Structure formats: structure tokens, C-alpha cells
Image (cartoon, rainbow, N blue to C red; front, top):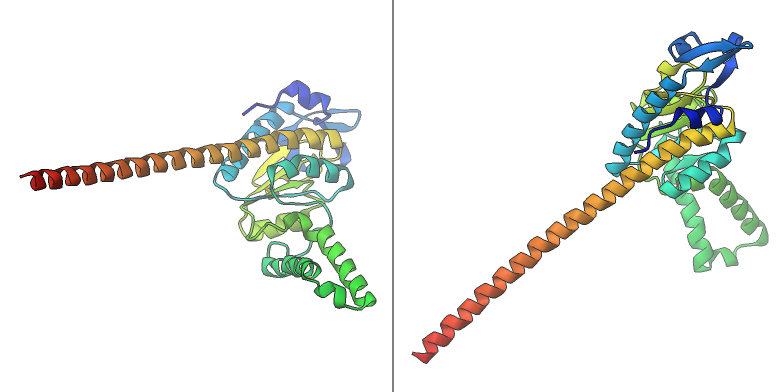
Length: 267
């Protein structure tokens, strides 16, 4: 797994925090200095925390579990979509639906509703409805797709949450904490890092900074998935080998039986 280089973090503006008056005292261990009234994040700490979070996320992906990425702020939406889609992990970039985790059964019902509308469109039921009903259902489908389309494959609660900006996504963080779901997050100087399990001190406002952090964590997730697939392939090959050996032994046994029978007949 490639470690984060401080130079690339610097070029992405990861070190820029908020104004001094907006800081959270619990971020003090991660602040390197103050410059022109702005707090500068210690990139040594960022690199270390990023590596720690990446390793943990790789292990979760390797175990076959899902990590839900959450980022509803404007400058993070496209970045999250671009980085997360190739990993096949679920994500939320529109409004966070209250109870998404704590009332997961209701969210799953809404996702199933989306599937039932799709089935209506396929089996012709949709065509026999009135124009007004079709319009209402189409609008409902579009809303469900916008809000829940990216989590359609999430059949159970995620094993972890990755959040961009814990102040904006405080409801998501609170729900995860309530259910003891591990939380990973980009934490800026105006936030409380103790609210998440794996804080990554970094600028959570600039798209370039968000992209750089996500580049590393999603690469770790991909490595975890690749490792899982390689392990499955290895296990399958081992199982096939055992199966082939058993078949060969059975064949040898049958051949010996036949030879014995032939000898008996010859006598």
C-alpha cells in the first residue's frame, strides 16, 4: 500500500485549516502552527493517520464487508462519486435520510419500492396506468433514485462509515456511534476529532484536498478487495486440486477392482 507523500499532500492544500477563531481545542495535537490567522495542519500527523485509516479500511474490504461513504457538501459530491464508484462501495452524496442507519429497515423498504417500480415498467403494468399515475410514479422513482440509488445494493448495515466533514454530517456520525459502527473521517481544525474512531486531520473544504485523501483510502479499499478475490481464487484452486485428487484415487480404486475381477475370471 503506497504511503501518502507529504509533498503531494502539501500541493493538494491538505494542510490549510480554518481561521484561528473557529478552531476546536481538541484539534490542538494536529495543528502545526498559525499563519495569517489560519491554522496549519501538521502533515506528519495527517500522513500517519491516513495510513492508519487506510490499513483498517483495507482489512474491512478484504473481509467482504461494506464501507458507506458520506459527503453531501457541494465540493465533495463529484469527488466521492468519481473515487468510490470503481470500488463498488455504497455512498450518499445527496441529503442524508434521517434514520438511514438507526431505522435501516424503512430505508430498505424504500429501496424495494424502487425495484418494484422497475418491475412494473418491465412487465407492462406501468403502461396500463393513467397518464397522471404514470407521471406520479415516474417522479417518485426519480426521487428514490436520487436519494437512494447509490445504496441500492446495501442489503445490510455497513461495517464502517467514511465521512467528509463531520460537522455537516453530524447526524450520520451520531447514528453510526449509536450502533457502534466504526467511523472514518476527514476532520478539519473546526471539528472535534474524538467524535470519530479514525480521524484524518485535513482540509475538508477544498475539492483537491478531499480528492487526495479519497485517492488514498479508495486505493486501500481496492487493494483489500483484490486481496480477497486472490484469496478466494487460491482457495478455489486448492479445493479443485483436492477434488481432482479424490477423483483420481477413485478411478485408481475402480481400475484395481477391474484388474482383480479380470484375474479371477482368467483363473
